[in-house]
Length: 157
Image (tube, rainbow, N blue to C red):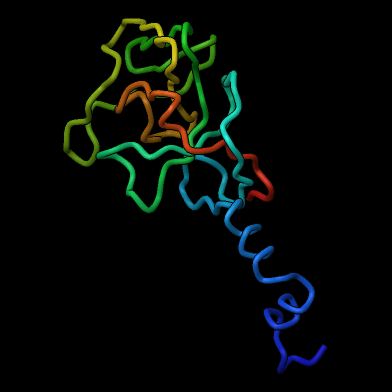
């Protein structure tokens, strides 16, 4: 293959452009440190949701309209989520600290210290184990109907 031709013209001959555009539409690049960097396959939300599933969601006031969050589901309707001091815990798993401030600015908290809450039916609690992840510990539970997709890692680093 000649280097003058380049990869795109060759791909367009091999793969019809419409198919290539559809393939790209179902892949998301994650550059947020809340999850491993990489490419994620995007597909429709499947029910019932289980803890550990990665979801795509736009949280008004938190995520940019053009860059929705990619977050793991930590708890589903009926599950308990506890804040033990500064630690967030659900299903016996420690999700790390709940911080009171970021760079001197106060942060909201969805769960008061030393209390537990039950996720309401039809909602999920999103949380990552990565330190300082912006998730439900700050913005609260998310209605399942607000989830736009499920994400499956394709290639991460």
